[in-house]
Image 1 (cartoon, rainbow, N blue to C red):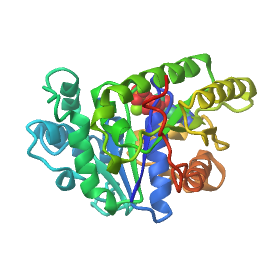
Image 2: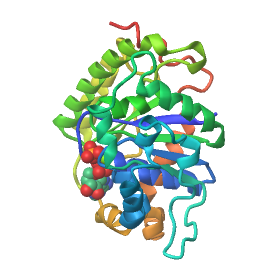
Image 3: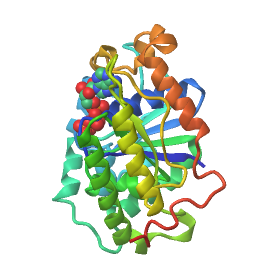
Image 4: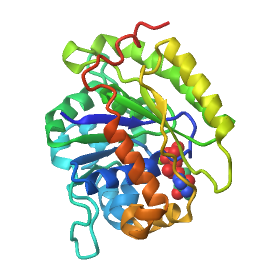
Length: 307
Ligand SMILES: Nc1ncnc2c1ncn2[C@@H]1O[C@H](COP(=O)(O)OP(=O)(O)OP(=O)(O)O)[C@@H](O)[C@H]1O
Ligand SMILES: [Mg+2]
């Protein structure tokens, strides 16, 4: 079964989308079958990987994206996944194995217009459909917006590991703390829908520092984050194995350029993979591959009941 990872932080702009797109590319380059699910109403990872023209076509249709699974509810996830999403101008697959479950701007309607069935909430419908397709993948990655509202809940309910991208600043730490509080509330509210078969709620497995400027010492923000992580571990609010990842991602202009080109960094410049920020993403992918906190353990068991 696929490892299902959600990237989430209550603070916006910390690098969730850049990390997930570039990580997904690194995993696909290693021969892994990867599905990236864009759960952000801003559609950033969908626009990045599809580029604006292809994405616009789906956006105009108002079908074929995540929201149409819920409303009108006629699309099935398995039919709307875009296989080998990264293509060149001739339509040739550039990164076989990387698929996208796209989103469009109508996902915003999940926050207000969508009438949630209290017996069958949005995250349960989404999870059922993920279960139909997860055997096709090694990794399913959820790119979440910076909150735990309805769109994020789709990924959080279904994930088995949570990753927290953070910048080396006080606001990222505040965002992390707030997120843990809100996660707990959501887990309590949704606990009644959790069957044994689904396994336990996901807990935070790792914090990843992003956008580290050259010659900036991140020792102090790292130490503060580690103290907070230790405190949450004691309260059993994060995984026992949760850690700050050794691989942090440097600040590099090519990350922003990659978005404009509609490519992950590793396809923009192969030199980056051996020496630049591409190597940071690649090291991170390797670290995540080797740090499967749920392999053989019962993760998350105490979250719903923790105080
Ligand atoms: N390592 C990096 N080096 C340089 N720029 C970066 C890096 N990582 C991210 N950025 C840039 O920072 C901005 C925010 O990044 P990104 O969109 O990935 O954050 P996010 O957490 O997904 O934001 P949101 O909360 O809005 O979803 C983008 O312009 C992105 O190109
Ligand atoms: Mg984002």
